[in-house]
Image (cartoon, rainbow over all chains, first blue to last red; front, top):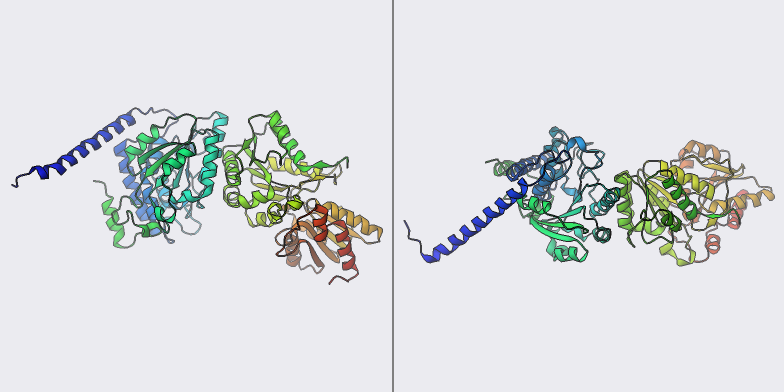
Length: 317
Length: 316
């Protein structure tokens, strides 16, 4: 047995402290989750951290198969980066259910980064908004699941998107209507970070702040990659938090690939009179080692042995 | 003229009447409160108007969101900025999403005259015709305008209404009943049929009346409903004519001129067609409205001249 020297103990001690810190975060998050009140008009799943993590893995497996079956490619990287965000929303946070998709008081989720429709569909299918056997028809002719979301085709989809920079202006209208009608609904919008170069977002940000839409929650899936390469190199959005602050938003950040971090952040939003933005720091392609962080997977789909390799990595332990 | 009325005033009165009738109507403007003459509405219903500032994209996006939440959302701003600045929001958020939004293109055509081409909308009909799922109207007089707006507010789905920016005299009598899709015959005649829309219908009617005194038999059809359009009715109105003229304060491509040309070609009609408006590749001249119309031969004198040349076969 090798004798541990003081020099070797340093890093081990550091790792131990980090581990304890991590446990504490998890513990706190679980406490927050327990305090969440369950009512009649609430999310029907109410999953805890472990349940959400398991759902996220199941949704990732669906994303791999969905993109592998697609005749027209897909956006695997973007689908994967948002998994924990949409999972947390659909399986815990959203006051919406498959049998209440027309309820006037339901919360609204808008997938503004419409190119990640595949990931969105897998989440909706997992939550029971439409039959799972629709998934293999993704991007096939006249499918219920086209390459970008279409509300007339897919139950649960709230807005047709695909052209970027459209979700937030429409969400402003929805949130404004809810305020005026005295409805308690919240409006969530998921954008990419590259998408924020579209000026319509900032027109909408002005209006959201002006009309004090504190029922509006913008989530930036900040995976730092876009079609042509790193967002930082193409058109940098940083310092993103300061930009949103300057536009009058209440800004928080979270680990966008950690359900506990997402849930505790979103459940903790309380600033009155200001719209919210949550900058969710994510990894594009998260969850699969050979896809994560690689720009070439923006529009690539898994093939051959990549499918089995990915599914193996995503198996429940 | 005593029976003249500005179409924006008609529009605002329709909004007021709709809200009084229980319609949850919300006007959305982009700083365009004076353009839309909306003050009487704001005075009666404070807090109902949404003003997003000089930002047309969010104006239309917000309107779509309001409509998704159950409101009848109506946007009111200058047609050139609505068309071009919020083009994709109209295409995606309004048309593709099939939201219950009514788009009012105010001061359309060359209403802004001397303010020049940034302020002219001579492409709006062609743009709207390229989009799916939206109904397109261009009222020619206050009576028709009121009925079109009343129809649009009741109709569930996207509508574009092309509004002229000047007070217009009444053309239709009290018995007039607007029906979406129906072109209305304002003057009967067999030698030449003039199709027109919007404020230049008045020029066409004046031209037809002048020509009648000269012994020419000229019909005027007001095609205020571009989509839907009862094609068979228009075919019937055109058939038998030796000559057809389309008149619009709009580019001849994609607007009424194209509607008529397509219909005639598809029906195998052999009458000669002359399309009057902004010529291919051109702009409307910056200047007084009457000057601009004169330059485009869409004033009554220009239309009279074209008709005479057609009938006497001297048009080259």
